[in-house]
Length: 277
Image 1 (cartoon, helix red, strand yellow):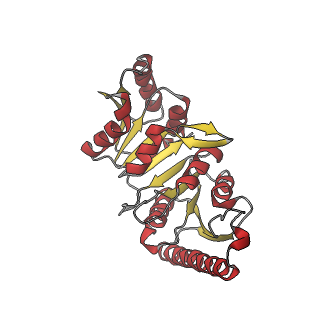
Image 2: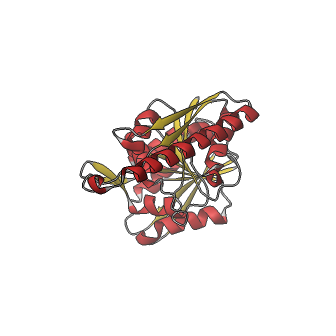
Image 3: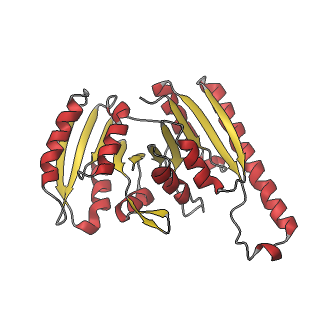
């Protein structure tokens, strides 16, 4: 059940599609929505600070705070137009920084919503996404920066590899799957595939059926290095509206780093991706 959602608000008004997508979730599921904007200055290495002009640092802080306040104002205006129940929060520089702060906040919500990074515009949410995925204990939806419309649940493709994260994602996504017109369980078969997963895929379909989710199981071949491209090509061919998948990664110096397939899908996705770890 989804009743409480948090969305990371973008400073740049051209990226307000994530706000609108979160609003559409609130409208679809009658949830309480919290919009969060961070007014912060990007971390500057401590060895640089003594030589960093104070007036430039002050200008940076003022500009980011103004941009964050603008995001809050646009969110509040959109909420007022929609009539949903919501609140906004402006958070200034914290000891832990936006990624860890947002992840900690996310533990108190059913779902987090974040926009995909856009290297061309310099908008990077990679650290935010990684923190929310691995440290919040809750699912998140990553919205493409090219997103034009709101939440669509016409056709959802669930990626299944038999792993814990995939199972967690399927369970967390049940409220969405129940409202979908078509749900497919996609198994990508390659040289590393444990074919017992194929059998268990049919069993998972039966399990979802007991939740009144009708599932079609689809198995497609792909080389190990082409898993992400295979998934995204299939999603495009099927005109799917959402991907549900487990988010994978590995630990490095007490921080999580996205796995190859997860990272590639998040960098080239064209539809929203629902993820759990």
